[in-house]
Amino acid sequence: MSIAGRVSTLRRPRDLMEERPPAAWTARIVTLFPEAFPGILGLSLTGKARDQGLWGLDTIDLRPFGLGKHKNVDDTPAGGGAGMVLRADVVGPALDHAALGTPEDRTRWPVVYMSPRGKPFTQAMAQRFAGAEGMTILCGRFEGVDERVLDHYAIEEVSIGDFVLTGGELAAQIVIDATIRLLPGVLGNQASTEEESFSHGLLEHPQYTRPAEWQGRAIPEVLMSGHHGRIEAWRRAQSEEITRTRRPDLWDAHIAKQKKGD
Image (tube, rainbow, N blue to C red; front, side, top):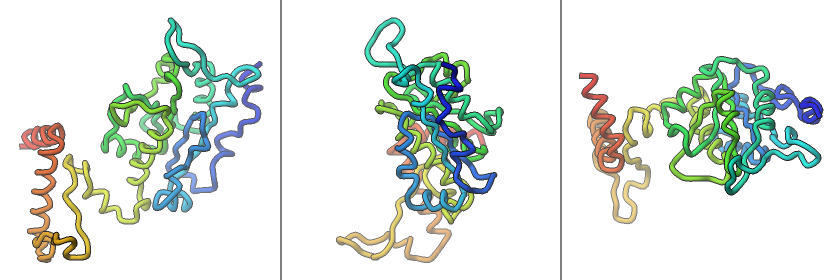
């Protein structure tokens, strides 16, 4: 059966899009579990921003691209071994489908595969993704996807940590959340993204709010002083100390950057 015949019941990405401004940043997710989305992304500020058209989400169900009567999407690993691998002749057409109407330039539209062997996801990476027009994320399952798909489409592999999940859907939601909160208007107060962890290579300073005393613990006096210069200096010192003790890797990178700037 032709690929066209196998996917005739799948709506085009244009039909999948909800009404929103044409320029809205959009995530397209290729997944066996489209019902997993929007998940947490549909709640709170990110959900409200999506309703307002500040960003969009399209899911491309991998199953309709499956082969045969049972729409099989995977097969046993070449060379033997446990588990199953997503087939190239299934994932490839799904990615072609997801690419409809998107720029070929990967700086304008990154294509990412969530993988524990990928580059560690960072704030800088989220900023790069937010600067694009949107992105496509392939969510793996089982033992992963046929390597030829990754090579053929020059897909960028991204990891959220040194551990293994049952699939890429949760990881994709993490990447999307970290990215869309950087889009103008999503958080409401853009200044908040400029002061939080990793924005300047350091972990964020401690935060406090009312009551002034709780369980015998008082808010640091400097924060109650109203002296903005002292407050800024205290916060900076706290960020540096927390980064130095908790994330020596970030601290070393911060020091190296400081020396380079001298």
